[in-house]
Length: 158
Ligand SMILES: [Fe+2]
Image (cartoon, rainbow, N blue to C red; front, side):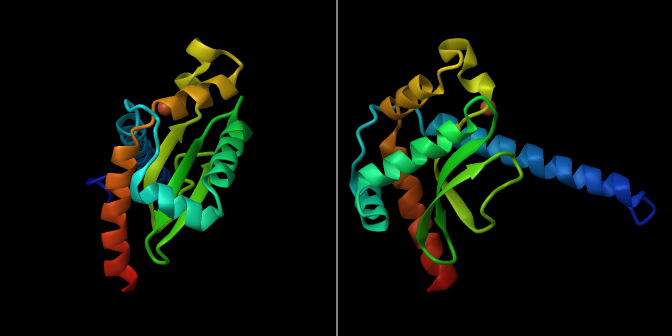
């Protein structure tokens, strides 16, 4: 990327920029995914209350997150619970590609729905993988991200 100049063909620059975004997001989302795993799956803390407030009940949010994940089953992509920094709102997103992201979104909970993440263990049964994911979420890490994000959102929108 550092070798891009005014003489670099535009189609090469465009392709390099697309690859840069794909790999940067892939790295970021994989790190967030692995570090929000390793827990006991018991949700609590500020994020639990915020989900209840945003979605009327945590069961509604849970169903929407799982449905978003199943929508990617057999395909590939990410499901992300994000904090939208310009509004301070929680958003549940399905991303079919590493480059589809909420521009002002801070990932709080990330689920890898690329087949490589579950096919060896669960085959064509993404529901079992999603169950296993939720049983192992580190909600203390999600809460840490949420609390950091709330401070950032306050700084962004006051
Ligand atoms: Fe992955």
